[in-house]
Image 1 (tube, rainbow, N blue to C red):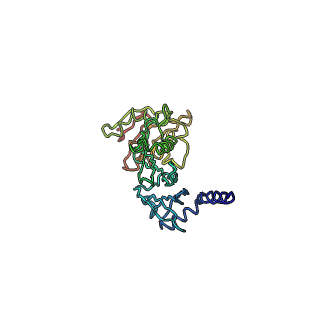
Image 2: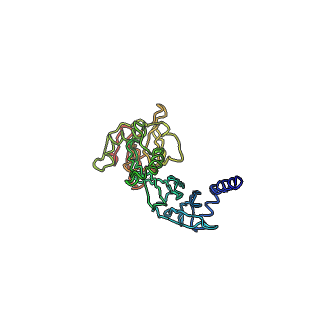
Image 3: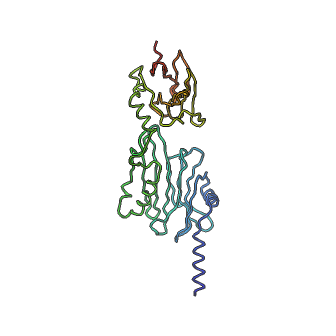
Length: 307
């Protein structure tokens, strides 16, 4: 009898082993016949399971699928179109059995960036009750981390879902976008300082604004950075640097200072060209093709050159 029990335990232990990442991806691909981005595997007392994020073509919307092993193959038991490409940041995917009922839960997380806000999304699918539970962090660009908004779907707050809620809260509060009380945000402070004083130049209501360059949150914003620098110009002993999804900075090599002189209303309308026109620094909006001008002598921003 002891020998039989020992053999049973050993067999159960071996069946609980998850597939390797390569084997899981191969199995999911055979069943789905699409491009599989990510997989997760889990064995419970009810069987062997796979979860997959897949799409039919690069850049297409992602589908999440739960598969169960039947015989020698995996068959789809549930799938959902997410209506998201998940190309902006690598998604995550896992299979768990949180309430130990043998029916797995599929968890995935992805990020979606917009023009002025971004969302971090957390979703859990309960295969036993066929219900979705979700949470999201809405992040405001240029805002403080403490200004982000965290939302939990009402279903997660039901007493019966306390285990699911605890799991999701753990994921949300470890996310980089989770709001931190009194978090230091020197870059955001710099943008808010410039926008609060001089952002009216982007409104179209005025043609000229006298400015005082706002000290950069770090002098590294003026350093050469091929990954983020979109334009660079040296004129009159000063160097002007335009950055991707950012503003235009002026570097004074003698004083070793770096300061922000312009920030666009929309981060997607960064400056992609700098040149000197009649002594003014012309800065081209990469989206509209229009120029804004900076007079380094009188410290004036203008929608046109003053004559």
